[in-house]
Image (cartoon, rainbow, N blue to C red; front, side, top):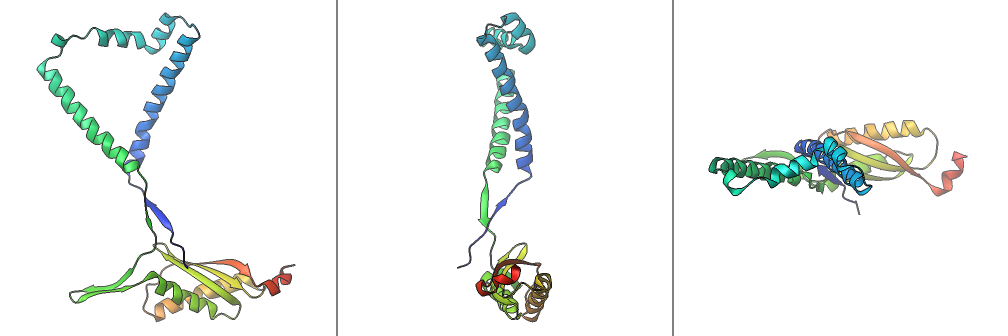
Amino acid sequence: MVRQRLRGRRSPLVFFGLLLLVPVALALIWYGAMLVALAFKAPPETVNAISGYRDAYDFLADIEAGDVTGRARLIASLAGLAAFVVLGLLAWKQVPRPYLARGDLTLAENDRGTSTVEPRAIERAAEVAACAHPSVSDATGRYGEDGIDLDIDVKRAGDVLGTLREVQRRVGEALRRHDLPDVPVSVTLTGLERQRRRELE
């Protein structure tokens, strides 16, 4: 059974979300350090001069109901709504969305219908072409958006590099012969027949 690979889609907004986290994280670290300083009996006047925490508290504490006009309420409401939409969108884009890398390949599409090929058919064509090489004993292919990843086992540890190149060429020819897209083929040596392993020594 061929294992499905998972990929993750990343939106460009993820970068802006991470960029927004930097000043927030720095502010939390900074004011956390101020709390630690106050806990260790640092002079409040010095801490206030550095962070301004007391000035900000006094300013907010002095605000009364009469100071908040209708215009200020409207501005605050619109700003809060805009912040909710923007920050909510950025948070939503941070959620990973994995998807299966393998999917049906559309060969042709017209008013009569669509011609598609399942990934396993493409993988099987690559595996048969690879196993046709006299030095290859087994092959396993995985088709994805980036092309075909082909793992092969060889019978002997001779010209391994030449074998990999030849297998890659054969798979490319097989895809073209079957009218399949000429996608990139990556060949990896994953095994050597047990009775032939002594040749590596």
